[in-house]
Image (cartoon, rainbow, N blue to C red; front, side):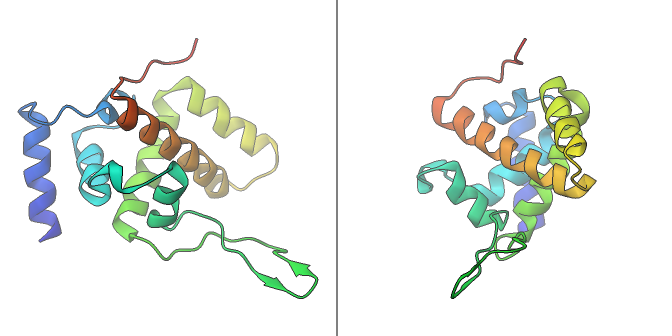
Length: 144
């Protein structure tokens, strides 16, 4: 069912019936854009980009017990695994094609973060960007 819906949305993208600003981000093509749009659906359901992060299961988990407060926060993987897959893989390509995201990834790596941890940070940045673009209906303009 999901695969059939994915191909239907991809076809709508290709014949220009869906004009999403997601496709203006370098590194996101019709396939990844279709997966993200199909999994998120209507962006009006979410009040903020943080809600989309939680829906995708990309928000950090919280653990509190007495005086102990989240010693080693981990990504909670409770949301849509298909959305998490699409966002994570799209981020890898966006970091390759966009200099702003590439610099952000390099900054996180310089801080000593593991590659996939740095990519997850870039994914959070990408989700905030996608949310803003969808809400404002503007195309992505690369920062100079």
